[in-house]
Each structure stands twice: as C-alpha cells, then as structure tokens.
Image 1: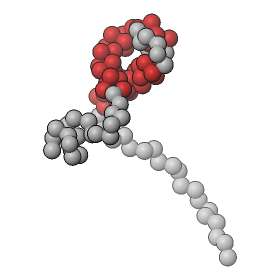
Image 2: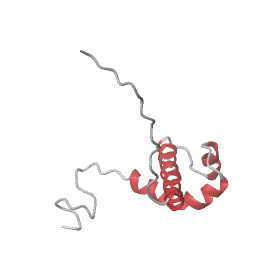
Image 3: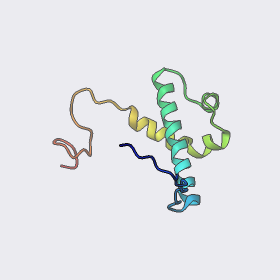
Length: 100
C-alpha cells in the first residue's frame, strides 16, 4: 500500500559558511586572472598579437588589464611551453627533473 505524506516540510535556507567578503574578492581576482590567461593563450596560438586592444575586445576592462595583465601573461607563457622530446620539465618530481 502506498502512503502519502500529509504535511510538506518547508525548505530551509542553506547556512552561509566562511567569510563572504574576503573569500569572494579573492575568488573573483583569481577567476579574472585565469580567464585572461586562457584568452591570452588562445590569442597567441591563433598567431595574433596579444595587446590591450585585443583584450578589450574580449570584455576586459582597462583596470583589469592593468591589474592582472602582467601576471596573466606570465601564466600564459608558462602554460604555452611544450615538451615534444618526452623529457619531463625541469623541477618535475619524475626521473630526470631537477628535483630528483
């Protein structure tokens, strides 16, 4: 036999955990930098020059470009390096790296 509940419990609001002001500010800063890094990689692999005008076309403000541009460019350079000989990158914990 199927029994139905006669009362429906009200949904409870989820509790807020953490410090929303500082956590959200850090999270937003990192996401802008990561997004800018991805855009710089795409622009570079397409063979186009990556300048502030190009980043403005991808909806970055002047303040974001000035603040996060140098760090995002450094991250994009690090991620753009390719090893084709099969050797691990320097500092890798695998055999042959500088850390072994």
